[in-house]
Image (cartoon, rainbow over all chains, first blue to last red; front, side, top):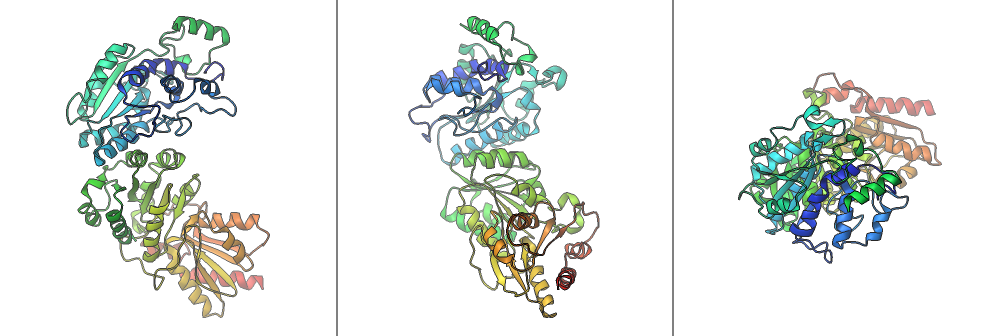
Length: 250
Length: 307
């Protein structure tokens, strides 16, 4: 998808894709045959630039035909380079500007409470995204309201757009920050499907508190020449690079 | 207008359980009448406007009709991107309600002067911009905002004490101007809380045997272009408590510039500058030439030049 459209953000997608697999193929209560079921779990990819991983997950889960993936970022295509509501079934919110997904997720979690529905709302965020003040506005509010039907998952690959998070704007002590905002936090290996499923299967971690999974990840995971390399936030793989990458990912 | 807003909203909320009110910590001593009736459907996000609009979008994506309230400057500017991307791009029933439009906050200074909010809101696709001219129009605009399927900006004036201009509820439709009085020589189109001034201008001109019609234009977007083109047979003036850039005057100018009629035209509004002059709303209006006497005399000057 990314190579064909010569688009960017392959590193960000590879870093989050295991989280999406754990969600869409194990933990999320969703049914591709009824994508608007009011009881479905809600999912928001707040790091909207990682959307290729979401589109692929939705297609493989059966929300739409896999051939649609070929239109990613293509002229007259269906799938834009940031997550867009209503572009295909299964998308719950438009994202792309960072710091928007968690407040929207809070709204969905509040609606579940108002309507006495049992669905959960999951929001995957980037680490660099957590520089945004709106993330902490929403975190404080969710903690105050004790929204234990809300789950944030941070794709903590420790690289943001201009360098390492520890150099740009250090998030540590990260779990403690969330805990001090009233959340229950768990740290996991974000590339271990079993560890992710174990954590996500036990939400809420504490009754009466929103849950956050800090998933330690590697940007560009699975492709040796992309792993932990900032430039793969921007670069598009050339045909020979695509071939090598796909070989390594098999 | 704020009183008309909350009273009307409470009435609607009684019948429709989808209605939710979010305030970013504003409305003390006024909103209690709503909160006490619908505690589970009122949320105070604290002083966090971005979060308030994001939450509203999440609720709206879950089938709610959400009104987000705070002071007009903070309601529009702080969460500008959330309004654009979360509410407008996703075309959701999120209604941004700004209190204290224009110079309502008088001596409190430019942080509290909503003088560019119409311009920001008007630029956004899917957005409807409603600026009621008196409490009658406020009530009608709240009902219209509720019925609109998409996002909306509702710009209110003062808390209470806005003068009634209409004698009874006028005929109102989103996107349509309301003719308040006819005039054979010219028309003054007003939006928002300048309506009472517009009527006073027409009365002053009548004393000089000039027939100036008054049109209230509570919907700045979508603008009643048809009416504007019709009025363009005679001189057209606009008045608003807003910058002359991007508000009603600009919207009307766009229609006139692209139309066939070349009407004499002038915008009455605030200059492209921060209002650093200190004073009450009335005082500031005088200072910026937005009081009835100044506007009437400028219109007389322009009409005399035409003859």
